[in-house]
Image (tube, rainbow, N blue to C red):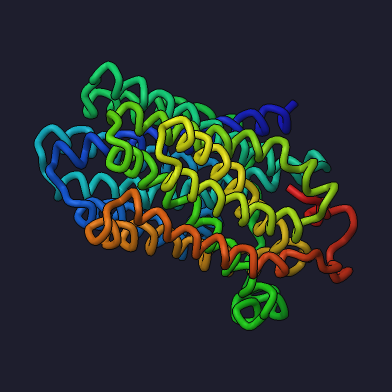
Amino acid sequence: MAVRGARNAVATVFLLSGLILASWLSRLPHVRDHLELTAGELGRLVLIGAVGAVGSLPLAGLIVNRFGPRWTVAGAVLLTSFGGGLFAVAEPLRSPVLVAAGLFAMGYGMGTWDVAMNVEGAEVERRRGRALMPRLHAGFSLGTVLGAGLGAAAAAVELPVSVHIGLAAAVTAAAGVAATWFFLPGQPVPAVAERPKTGLRLAWREPRTLLLGVMVLAFALAEGIANDWLAIGLVDGLRVSNATGALGFAVFVAAMTGFRVVGTVVLDRFGRVRALRASGLLIAAGVLLVVFGGSLPVAFAGAVVWGAGAALGFPVGMSAAADDPARAPARVSVVSSIGYTAFLAGPTLLGWLGDQVGVHRALLVVLGAAAVAVAAASGARPVPAEPRVPAGNRVDVTAPV
């Protein structure tokens, strides 16, 4: 019963993480217009949130080791909600500085939150003795669908951003902290430094691990650009309303969520490498439809194809990095560190290109990411685990996700 309660609790915090993220992303067109920002200025503003998220990663593991997943998630939820509240207050004041401060706090909180909830999810998975993580990540995607859908509805009825994001932050804080009380009792997290043959320094020199990191970076770039810029690209390129742009973003995240649920069938039938190569091709096809389709229905169809292609890259990359349980912590850390740089590069790159050719055409940069994803997919080929972990402590991490 305790494990079942912890499973439901960690699923809740995964969903809330996606909801609060998509809530403010869906209102970016309004924020841009209200603050009278250029594409480049908006890109730099979004970058500040990404800097906060990436900057939290080096300390997140230490914080989880010191306080455990329960208290770390609770604290990170409160920090994220505080950032959302600051964002909500700053937006009607037309203060880019306060908006940037809110985004940084949200980013730092969400980065720490992400690490801690994955640690808790992995421990629940180990206690259950069967795979759970893919469903948890699908729960995060479901949260983004809900957040984007609510954002589209809020934009349609012209609900002020301050009210919308303020309510989202309050609900996240209350529900997130309440859920952590059902986490498992504090579990010790093994330190990588205690395993001299499986440390970070060695992982950074492994060609397969680096190739996986590049692959995850490419998929994360394709996903992150859609998150940050798809709504604005539709608004600018097709001359639709902000609400319609937000709806296009919702279509993208809905497609990605759905394919994460059914994608395991594709992985079981065709294997990781072929599934990931097909995913890269789907991303390219989706972007071409969005940019050159010429109509809203075709662009929405492109968003569906783009979302389906972006679905499997990140979770399969994490699974492949964890093929050997004894080396999994260091390898996953390296792959995550490389992949997260997409959230630093993406907003700035698209903002700069948007100033040059317009945001709609700038989305074509994703074609390069898709090509890299196809080329690097071979790194996900399963490798045998070294028999260094007792069988009773293992979870089958080689299964596709």
